[in-house]
Length: 289
Length: 292
Image 1 (cartoon, helix red, strand yellow):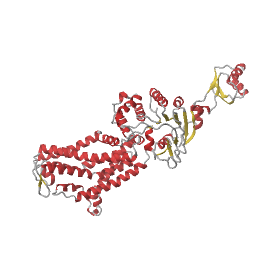
Image 2 (cartoon, helix red, strand yellow):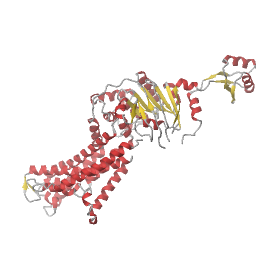
Image 3 (spheres, chains in turn yellow, brown):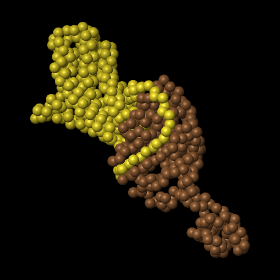
Image 4 (spheres, chains in turn blue, yellow):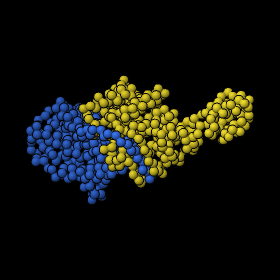
């Protein structure tokens, strides 16, 4: 049943309400409240905060003093590496899962509750609502990695000795600079998640079932991950979402090696541009029932 | 085709009843008016502006309740109001809380403002949905089935509320299939069926479309029918206890006198004005032949 040949019209003459000021920011703040006020978001952030704690306790109990390769092996010697190790270990699975849940929910959740039509008749404006959703997702990615950073800092400083930081290049920097570099890593990792967030937002604009959106987004993530692991596909590897995710470690070189990080962020920007535009095309033309 | 060439003329300050059987295209029309869906062809205008092109300009002047209440169940009633108000960039954030309080009071939900919507009954949600529309002074309120799911008290309250709003100068456009509602509240009405607009006019004119019927309640059915036929009553119909028909232009007392003269025992006698329901059924058909 499709509406057709409609010339519905309501005419009336009344005085126009004095035009109020523009308060465009309110929707964005409200959007953050919606994302971060939900119990599921808080539990998710709690799980992320527990990652450094679990790793820290495991290392402490095993009495590991450097037998392990990589950042994990350095934690026992310098608690600061707990931040980097936790961020690195959360990147392949925990963080994408969280981003998938929040982004899949974003539009499909509103559609399934029916609140989407309340927002649109408010009127929020479809483009503005989409922008608010993307901004909230970006803030979520930042908060998620910062949660690990803060938790890693606290646990690392309580459980392990801390001091000057030995970089990958062999030189040493002060603890303060080490913390700053870990902070940069957290930001780089949160930006690495934006491509996935945009995919989730797009999928979420297609359906009124949040679970389906989450599953489809996560499925896409898994498929891209498998493709990244197949050597025969090396020709398209540079275009795959997570191909340069591990480049965050280059922040710990002296001087930091920005080339791969830059390529990664450029790729994320490309994914955001493509999928955000697709989501926009979808949401601005979608029939809201 | 769900809706075809519907042109609704809603006078300012009227309470306009939008009637039609289920599936007749009422909600589709309302969705199009509010820019939620796009017509496959043609144009939509609301308050003299093209929709959905001018929706950011028009919709702040319109309060809407479309197709049942929809809220965030994990938020309080007040928090829900604040969010939908925040979505409107013309809404002043400084007065937001105060306006939410007033709107909640107006629909009688002040005591439940801090409760999560999950714990609300359907009637409370319905009233909360009306509160969303009342967060600001509107020129036009579009209420899709506002009394759906309400108990008799709630229905009365909504009716009073609609009258109050109308007397404040707000135009109210309400869709419903409860005809008694329309007769009590609305000044104007439109009747839709199968996506087409059948009639629109004042409620009084709609009722006047059907002629009043003469109804005689009597045990002497045969004699009564004969007498009435002799006086030129047409469309005579005999039921178990009554004889009824279209009295034509003769004054009603003539029939009474004639019946008494013919020794017809009269248990009841009078003119029955057709209800809006009769008009509605005459236009849209009996029974369950809902538009496909």
